[in-house]
Image 1 (cartoon, one colour):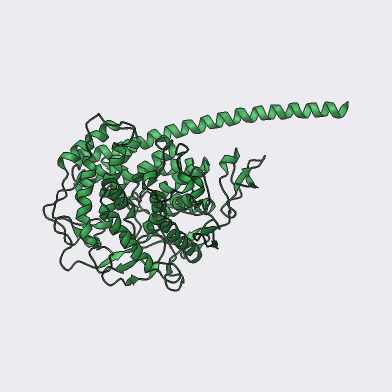
Image 2 (spheres, rainbow, N blue to C red):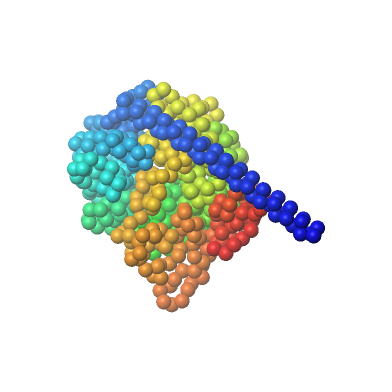
Amino acid sequence: MLPHMCLKWVLLLLLISISVLDVYSSDENHVWATKKRRMREKVRRMFYHAYDNYMNHAFPHDELKPLTKTFTDSLSELGNLRLEHLPHDYNGSALTLIESLSSLVIMGNNTEFERAIIWLSENLKFNVDARINLFECNIRVLGGLVSAHILATDSTNRLVQGAYKNQLLILAEDLGKRLLPAFDTPTGLPYAWINLKYGVMENETTETSTSGCGSLILEMGALSRLTGNPRFESAALHALRKLWSMRSSLNLFGTTLDVVTGEWIEHSSGIGAGVDSFYEYLFKAHIVFGKEEFWRMFHSAYVAVQKYFRHGPWYHEADMRTGKATYWQLTSLQAFWPGLQVLVGDVAAANSSHREFFYVWEKFGVLPERYLLDHQMLHPTEKYYPLRPELAESTFHLYQATKDPWYIEVGESIVNSLNLYTKVEGGFASIRDVTTMQHEDHQHSFFLAETCKYLYLLFDDSFLVNQNYIFTTEGHPIPVLSAWHERLPEAYIPTNWTFVKKEKLVRQASAMSMQVCPANTLDTGGSGSQHVKSACHVADARSNHRCLSDEDCGVDSTNCRRRSCSMAGYCGLWLSI
């Protein structure tokens, strides 16, 4: 009888323990839900502090100067470091308002969204004598208009019936046509600069960046799909293919090139400024348009990055021809990379790099523009922080993939730092020097388009429920639509698309919700399988990942299997996917 009685007591104690754990888990979930609501409202207040000050002191000019409560017509200055060929009669294009459109929708302010659409449709004109940067205008203005048009015409009936008659799409098409002359070069690679009224200026510089000619396909491709005019997508695709043909034997790309000769100017490259969004758009274009070509490009490029740039959790720069390291430095734009890795399925590597970026953020209070890894010190001249969104972006993606509450704490820290160091009476100001937190009189439009948006979505992702969106490099949502696909990645098929035949699909891409790793083989079209390196090949060093359930543990990047939560609350056991 004694063993039987002992067993009864053990079972009773086990039931009590399970009940206590259930209560504890329920209480903890309530605490986190309360914190997320509180932080969501804090981010909402941040956005409207920036937005209202822009509308009161700068609109309809491009961007707000929050310290003096004035404005700058900065569309002609973006990327123009020497401030050359500035227009005399340009009075702005309401840049910050355009950048804010999708953020207004995500925060549920359909009334202001409609007001903005009506104003833009009646007042915005692109027939202006202004020389602008093709890349910046594409991702900010064209992307903002295309995304907002899609949001205005989706099935949610956000607008008063009859209030919207494709005005934003009409504006976007007009702008797109004004950008097309930039592609009229011997190589098909576009000029970096174009005058919106007169086209390419005489004696225009032929130098551009890899990002500048390789990060146009999402916005211009979407414009073609929406208007039925193939010229936009064709021009962007031709430039992308030409750029791809210029890769080195190591599958690496330089930073700057000549659009006339097709020769590289700067051979040192990395994942930061000048190249960053090129990698991002290869993979995102595969998701949005379903072209196998984009996947093959990205896969080769991603493996090369991991092979030649990665050093532990960091990514240095290297010569595209030899793969030898050139510059050992962190740049703030690199902080987008963990977010991209989440989309690929390389969650463990994303977490590893993200923690290092956040460590630097905590060290200085914000993320400096350039940090010298080999000397563990700030770059002597690039000590600024212009309200960049990349760390918030990656934090959002990692939380979506893992549901690890630690990322909520990271987001809270970012919000608190922004309010402590960058909030001023007239909006939010850039930081000129992170060692002194001296302000600079500039509130960039991407603060509303991206920084506030990603922080808001981190704490409230209701906009994404039952929706599949890919965010452009400027944070503008583009939906994943079956009508736009040659072949849709399996992970992005909504359950209600019953007409899609899954057996014809290749399981390569990964959605944040599905966490599917890329395949270890690529289909060669009937001639068998060609074995290649998997993008999921970085060992998971995070052995101390606390968890409450298997869902908290995500996917191991080494073997593409789901991780399980042990009884002790750690992710360390493996289950087949």
